[in-house]
Length: 138
Image (cartoon, rainbow, N blue to C red; front, side, top):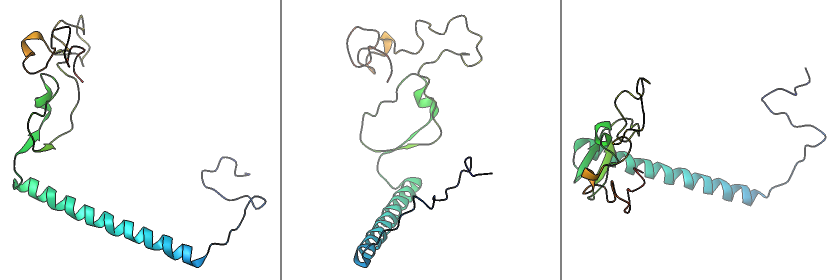
């Protein structure tokens, strides 16, 4: 066992080098690290406070987003507010029923995966040759 396949590291004595670092540089770096830790703790406290307010419904215009909000395509944010994703989201915009089971004759039906012309008010370019959604959902 010569250690060639070991995941840990052990410096080779022939290539191991030592360097001197000024004590002032070490102290300065330590102060920078401590300040970074303090800043991160402050940011975490602010984030926790905001999350608590969101859970309590204290924030104005809180919108909770669920998987069902994506059933007919891209969820479009049309007004300002705090948007909270309430569950894991799988992005299968307008997927055909049963596609995951693999029992379909085609996976590219006329109204599958794309916004349709009847959705043009919600998705500019749906079912048309120009507009933001002419190439489908994104």
